[in-house]
Length: 191
Ligand code: SF4
Ligand code: SF4
Image (cartoon, rainbow, N blue to C red; front, side):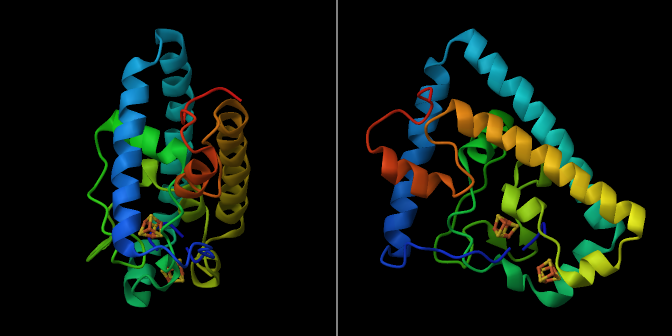
């Protein structure tokens, strides 16, 4: 789950240097768009991000109760390979508004994988990462915890979908992929 999610990266041709530049430009671009946003739109984002962050913290708590951090540390984050595209518009917005965006290192299997696991706080981690639990962690949960985990996952997905329906660059496929499709269209343009 949370520390470390294996997902297919379709952009094999990009070098880590290209990706790093592209990411830096995206971070600046979104920051500019956020600054220019009207009060009402910003409020909508803040309120819905608050719900997302609350659910992500609850999911992470269940992960920790199952001994996830210790289990993942022994596994050395094997499911964090190919994490380049996990960050979505939702996650970058949350990290920017919270002021907790770590430096991305695109030479790593995931740009946010540090020596002691994920450098992103659980509340702003990608959906794919906070909702993935492998068999080892699922087996360490009791039935009630497991059911709660999957209920929270469903609620969280619905909140991400609200952003997908509202903003051009919002997609669970990730912000890098969505922004290439958009070209110069603003990331926060309304659908
Ligand atoms: S963002 Fe990267 S390092 Fe963090 S949990 Fe996801 S795949 Fe792992
Ligand atoms: S223990 Fe499971 S969730 Fe944790 S890093 Fe390994 S494969 Fe991923």
